[in-house]
Length: 359
Image (cartoon, rainbow, N blue to C red; front, side):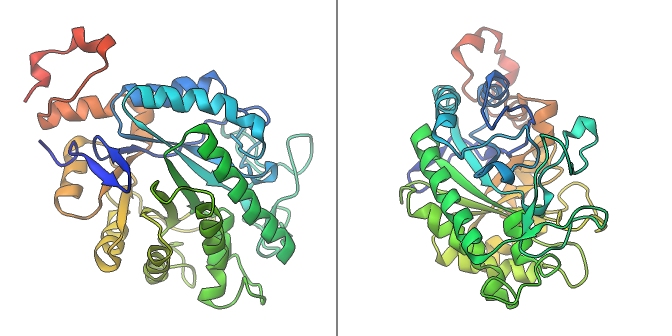
């Protein structure tokens, strides 16, 4: 059997293979509520053979949404539909995870297919917030600088959302601290010029992500995994960098975080990002092997042998598939065929399984 299709256990959760569906926003919710689009989108990836399905960035407060059509978990009423989605994922052999998020200064945006620019007026816009009054783009309205008490309210919101996620049945929780959203904004010196306990030194700038992780852990069972997604570098001079990420990963490991989902960029609009196959894998590799914590590799991973090689070379523990899974909801099934692994198919589809899929 290939390493890609070998099981992987984190705490009390065993994944049937190493393929994870990355959280990808669908911009299809109303008032944060999931609907049948989310059921079919997430459910089809479970049917397609992935081991772990992580739900898109799910806002812990309304103003934490990237757009007005993002999913949310800021009220109890959101849980009912999510229970149905989680149940379907689990019934089809995958594990359901959720990414909790706050978009910070990158919130209040229009839908991508309408241009995706930040909205400053109308019912679908709101005042953004951040560590400092520094807009993501110069032409945007500056975010409101959060006070200490407002920061604590957000930490509590993450805690409350984690409790609701547990009530909905998710088995993995991921804290979103990447891509220029609120937690990343705090730890990057490019977006944080505070002089209080949440700014200045490295220890102060990472304080919020640590506060959030500890708040989540206070309601999340010790036997279930906690991931943190980080941007390993801002790809910009004087910004957050790879060495900072190694230090943060060590702190998160000491705090009981189980895996670093290793992405990059997103905090400044003019960064040059050398995107291409495996371009972020070296960050996952270094964090995994220097810090001794599980990592997930993500970013332009598009074929089975590429994913297998990353694992065989011990550069990461899990493979996070994003856009390729939008192109092919059955990527795991097709990858197994390529690698010669005979994996279990849904009973409803077994009659289409041919000998060519067997090793």
